[in-house]
Image 1 (cartoon, helix red, strand yellow):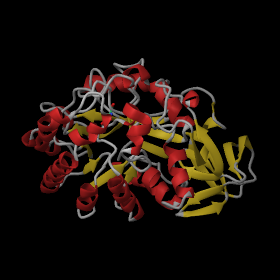
Image 2 (cartoon, rainbow, N blue to C red):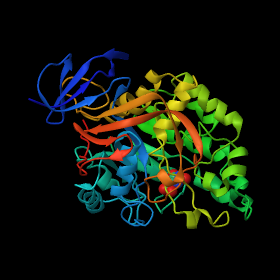
Image 3 (cartoon, protein in one colour):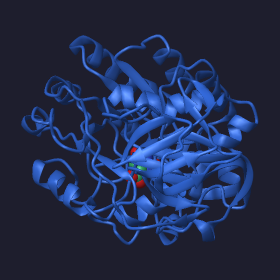
Length: 435
Ligand code: DOR
């Protein structure tokens, strides 16, 4: 007796869509064929596409510290509503997740409270190398997060010798917020009160490429793995496309959808994030990267802030925008508009995260793999509305816009956690396991 059969869907297997049924038992994929066996539950996926569970490799769920804005429970609800079956959550909480006790606290807080699967980043500091050297088999740890330039929270490792020590002491992937702190400090005076357009003037292209060059130099010299988060400049695209291998990089959906000055004129400080949304020439080069498979992942950088704070006058307004719920509709709309292929999106959200970070038994629809699925309707048009945003922040930069292509069901460890926009059952996400 199976627990669940997904029938009549087009399943994404071996880079193709195949009309086949999937049989699930005890959270694993046990049958991939036309199934006549009994099952406790059936999911009719007629006219739908069944993808491996999509993983958002950059989210900020704010717990502990700012649980008025988000917490592990609310963030995970937003994730499954958005078709996301697993998240990598960031350590810039209060206190930051930068020692073993705080890491264990996050795992304890996540247990029985998260609807999706999860892993946590361990934050790097200038002095926690001894902790970083013990992460190899730490349950639920996807990697090390290094803020080379300061952003939300107080994690920062900006001196070259300290960055080197972080890389030296870990065998995990080091994911980097790559902005050059010295350049940011020199240019801070260029911010104008009330003028969010000066955010990109302050945090300019040079601050991004200068830091990225330094990170790549260090990682290559020490033969370590670096993953550059939210790349925003044409200079970085050109540089990073020459340094593939142990160096990988992410682009966000918002940097592929919004550009300056339009986004700041429409959204004001709601478009403010680090590193900033830049002009159309950068946007075009980011799409060039996607078309040529230069970037390795798409992460939402889900970074919710309350409206009362976003409404403050620039630069007192915080940087960041939510995105875990909208990453799939936004990117599927780009698929429908011909900017990338569905196969590329599956690589960026499922296969590459699994391979880069070494997640066990995820990322592919294969026998004995975990039964995590993102079921999509590629033709359905939805309108993103603030009132439907599950995140505690209650807004989206895409409010009022229509998108073609959307998740209609999220299956996590063999259990249907979202169907037609409704959350089902109890939170039963598990920590991801890494090789
Ligand atoms: O804009 C941002 N907001 N960029 C980051 O790197 C951090 C994030 C946050 O946590 O608010």
